[in-house]
Image (cartoon, rainbow, N blue to C red; front, side, top):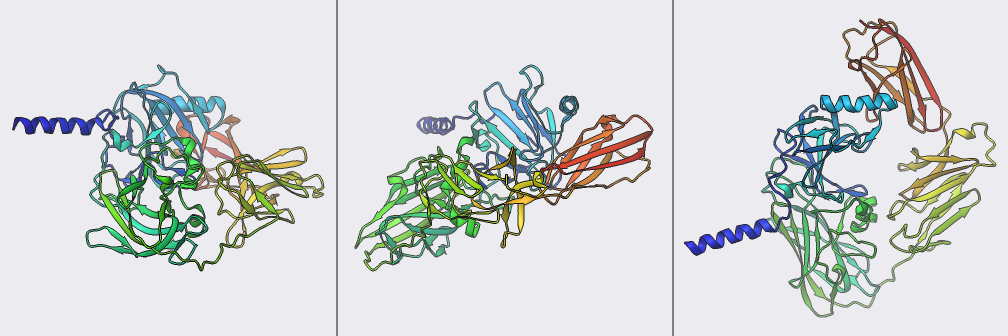
Length: 563
């Protein structure tokens, strides 16, 4: 009995020692069951998800608590991204982040509003001193919301180390009810070298998945030869949520030897664009499925990659029988296995892969310049992962830059020389990306003007065009009208829209005094809170000026009464 107890204690100690993070330091930031709408490391557009998205019962206004003692080290208020966000630095060196907030606690709200009124701006970012805004564990610091680039009410919660690297919050003792196994939905096989082939083809092959009774998977048997790789689409589900989330760990084995491991526990923000090298980016742009490659191509330096043998590739020899296995695991060690039986069979009758050649070739390790009349495109060194032939055409100030199936790791620039543009409204020109099946929709790309040139910086190939916007934004009152008494109203609401280049900025005053109006781009609403007490007179003159991205502007003026 004594030996058993000693062994048990030693085992428990070793298990605990494997996790270097404090498991009883941080509390859950909400007083509701932790149900995630998004998990750490989840694959998103151009980035890995850096925290937990915690469901807030499909509503806003839940109390958000400080996860531990510390001080508010950063507050950022923005229209996009995290929306309203609070950062707390703790004595143990970690920082917690709370984002998409509806509003801050009364004391923090007063602190930030004072600065917003002083600077006359809604968007603001401040870094308070260490002794300026101390907080204790379980202090209410904010209320949950849906601000910024949020698709619905939830709290985005992060834990970062002192190098600003996000870490899975579940490693710190926060827990989710999860006895549900991950799911594998797709499996593809890739011939890598010219002589490699799968089922007598040198093209990527989709393999049929077979669900086994125990929850694991088997793929159809394949005949292959040469250097090949695999990619899967996999996701996870928790017990209390039906939505699909990211997995925690993927491993691959060939004949029992590990060839690959991806471990989603911690990463750096500098790695974000490498996600597009980890997934089959071309497949994603075509099918909207994120296949996670179980092999490592050049330029993929993700720190989440662990034990890799021969870059994750396997070499199948003729007249052999081999087995490839994939293990997918979630944070709670629920796991599924995928087995692929491979018969080595060399085929010589293969069609050569067709390479579409154009007059323009991109060298990924060099800077590249494309020029056509009044248009120039500059790709910096290492903008791409691979060399390739690029499709580059210019017709009537519309640029075709290949298509969006090629990932970039650095932004590139597009510059138009508009010296010969005769239209009197040339100051209303901007560069837009054309999207949609027939490229009928325009998306404003931030455009910089210097004398007779317009420049934009982009991170996606595709179709771009020089676009004219001569239409002013629109401003419409929502909950009031000219001469109305608003004594019982707390909020003043207007709707602002711009169908061309989009809204750039706005300014509102009451009786000549600047007022803080919050802008929600998802609903196009401008909202003023009368509790700010800027309006103290009975008769009030409201003036709102809205400007779009090329300088067109509209002014709305009205009078209302309030006691």
